[in-house]
Image 1 (cartoon, rainbow, N blue to C red):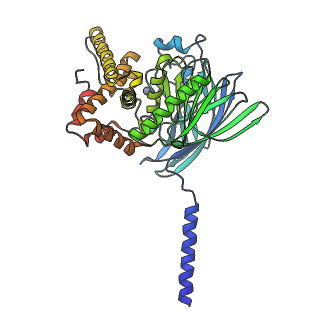
Image 2 (tube, rainbow, N blue to C red):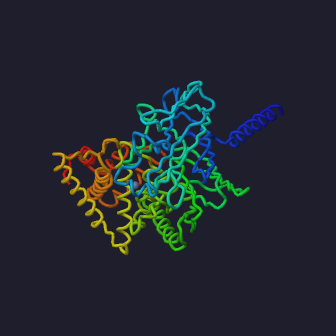
Image 3 (cartoon, protein in one colour):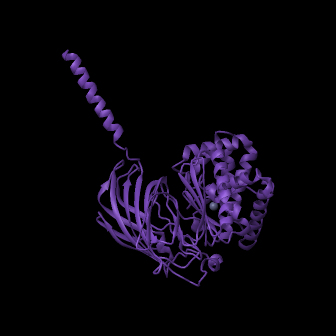
Length: 482
Ligand SMILES: [Zn+2]
């Protein structure tokens, strides 16, 4: 009897412990942001706070945390210009305009300063170091003035673009936190996946497109507050407008939206967003976020990718379908599988371009065949090679270059987009269609949620063919003649 009671007691205690463990929500091994921001449309300011719950997933003791503060790149007197001369007219639609981001306070730290290469790096000295596997919390207050500019962050002609709008933790590389100066060439963003809760307070007439799923909304005194959540994403962006017309549809359990300015345009954009999102999910692996939004907005380039949100330039014109598909491909190659966009732009741009080729070659109604698209990229690349060789007596065609080492957008576009596309087409010809797609599936499943190194993508392809490393090396090292 006693023995029975003891066994029962042990079982009860064990059961209670298991239940408690099951009930306690395990915190994921990644950082979390809680962002609250107020947009003042009269003053064109965005004022907010970022509560960051930092998780140390490195092998090192961390004494300082570093954040990229991209908004300060738009200030008057910035050494590194956020827009190249070639795109100035498209960007500054109302003449030269500046913005800036001030850090107004950081709580729970020993000190902080905004510095780095061009005053876009916030360094926060912690009170105590954080050891691997441990967490610490900070509260950062910021105030941004937004420039009148068709760019990632600013008041564009049709909408308020809030891309890279808050201090974001630098990704941690082999030499510590990675500072990303806001070079005009390419996308100078490298960040690790984190969880987000974002609240935006805006004038009531505005509609917000965002990276997250809407979980709360209330209106008061002519203002509207919307709260969004997004898990396991490497950034969070919003676009606000009082002109948006929205079309939405659910596919694969994902709420897909297109924000445009007429019903017809929103419906057309939605069709392309849905079709490309389902195509890439089928081809590479399931899309992981609960929503996906394509947003027409004022933007000086064709488009811009953020997790679960793509900005599409209202000036994209007949390239709109192509741009939507390209930016949607970035959900796989940038958002879910990250890469070092500062030093290996070809890894996500080349793949986004090639994924776009794959999409259109299966849709003959567009007339964009694989041969035509790869042929156009080859022709453009050869023209670049010829012009640069004549001008400079030689042409650097290496692909593993820092963004600052490209002399022009023309050079960057040819080396990352066009040569990147040619690299993946050459791999496909070498391996055959099935193995090629199998490698991309493998790359996606292996590296989803991570920042994939160049070696990681090469390793996935090298499993399927001989001397694939040599092929990558000849392209990346600039040896191959195209
Ligand atoms: Zn791209």
